[in-house]
Length: 633
Ligand code: COA
Ligand code: AMP
Image (cartoon, rainbow, N blue to C red; front, side, top):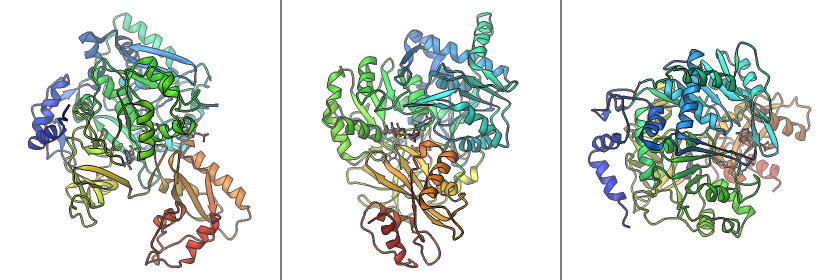
């Protein structure tokens, strides 16, 4: 089949507003948009300015009304607890209504913020949808983040309530969430009025009288009230009202609160499911990520449900739960047609099953496509997966900020030839421009900063939470008229994008986006540390791993080993285990420019054993020898 990609891209380019108004017809609006875009509103314009809608209605109610009541909406497959649970669209709607009623009783109304700090259980999705139903703004915080990270987010978005669980299950250990939540509330200046805690059978959390509410208790009460006639309708919101805030790493310890609206988000996700991922209503789709990340928001919860798909919500790991065949077991057992995961997961599986034997034990006949994103997909990994699975393996590139793919090989429009090393071509809705440092557009094949011409399409962030100025300075000021992605790369003669990596302090550890700047802030709080630099070190499994270089104060009496252990513990305590910060190297000094700037780029090249040119501005080149020595070379 010839790909329709070029025709569809041209159609969008000829009339972007008409294109999106057309896609908007797939959504059920309270007030349908008559206008696609208002260039005068917001920071760079707003999508569907005169429309109103409800995201939960589109994800659930309308499907139940249209005959999908008995179709499975969510399959919770949890090898870590040895359980499975299926919720039909009607059952999911009933759960969402019950929780929405409970939240109403706790005083949550339209526009209020609610933090969700939960493991991968259906209640996490129920929580998101219940907020959406009420027009409340959720902010999901990844369970692998520490109390202090949670506290930062509580203070930034000032939630009325926090929804959490007694525990998460990691292979080999139960992670008690409630003490982390208690500590976060203690650390935060803002105090949420109420929490709702899901008690899991694996661990019972201690509750604080008056503040903490038992999820199951509230649910039963609300279900009874609903059975007795209580109505929990969807609250109409403006298409431009926020649906959620998702914090993501920037260059400092203050994470950026990416805002997602209701209308544009629905239109973009609904369109993307079929056009980009080739998945139709009624099919089983699986994004093996976590609800704490953008992939979880867009493609575990909202995208598949908006489309009327069955979504797999997987609580486990690609390896060790119980083995490297788990992914193939899930695909076979539930009839998954497409899987979206991070390359690191496939690298992990490949390490354990280099010959690709495990997939052969399963019936993968329904499986059509493997999608990879979140970090660079290396060619070896793609080739291994192609061979082991016998399906196209499609790399694609996007960010928390965009909310949905910016570059992909669009399966639904018809695949173009795969080019290894490229995440594909520009998605309709986006215009990618490679720029040089002076914001001059570069030609095909030339490497530079990857920028997106404004306006961004529906679904992409309109701003940062309560921080329009930070949004401008972080993303829009560098290249007037463009959004700066902070990735560098190039576009080849045939329009394929190549992404080389970040130009800022963000690193990518097992597909998790983390800030080395934030880790440096944590490391430098250790009393013995005079100075430090955290670098993303190349890693075969996780892509990158943080590596800290520390210079100690003269007054320090601790051994290097003791310092290392303490600094590692400190980062785990302040940021969380997800940082995977395990390596600290003590050096006499850090290489710097004459103006005192730490030469992090050069340090990274040394650590990765890449060739580098001696920076002309280096103050003392022997500092680089110190690094080599400290690395034992
Ligand atoms: N709650 C609490 N802790 C969590 C957590 C959560 N939700 N998720 C991860 N952690 C912890 C882990 O237990 C681990 O802790 P440890 O240091 O005590 O071992 C640490 O955070 C790092 O976790 P992880 O990145 O998952 O690494 P791992 O070594 O346990 O597993 C892989 C390696 C490759 C299997 C794993 O990284 C993986 O599945 N990656 C895919 C990631 C992914 O899907 N990203 C999608 C982003 S779109
Ligand atoms: P996140 O906001 O967590 O989705 O991380 C976004 C960042 O991950 C991007 O800015 C890239 O640096 C990186 N990234 C995501 N997908 C890819 C990909 N397919 N190839 C290369 N880098 C990627």
